[in-house]
Image 1: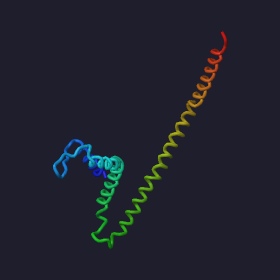
Image 2 (image 1 turned 30 degrees about the horizontal axis):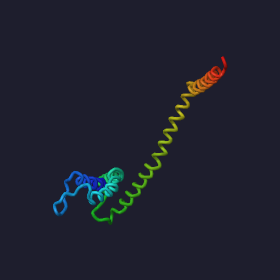
Image 3 (image 1 turned 180 degrees about the vertical axis):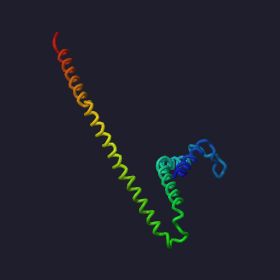
Image 4 (image 1 turned 90 degrees about the vertical axis):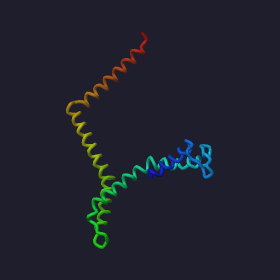
Length: 153
């Protein structure tokens, strides 16, 4: 998909820079219908190049590495190796499920642990109480300033 997006982009630039000639040998420029058509193609190719391509590229690499690592488990014919294939599908499903749900749950637990730890430290050191006292003092000072500013003098 990355190559598809790059091909659309490169073809449009090829015409834009005056490097493309038609069958009659005439120069095809940016005012041509071909260039406008490639503009539509670039709108399709841009997302392929920027978004879908890199994501699928990592997936293809992952599948290739897993296939290479597990290649000794398989024979040339599927009579004895089909259980390994089914097992691989199950393992892949479990890994995807863990990374989708288990990792998010684990991160929530770790963040909760650190939040509770920080709250306990604040309680021990009196940090929370000091912040509350400072907030009350600021409110009192603001009220006193308002009274001073509104009192005729």
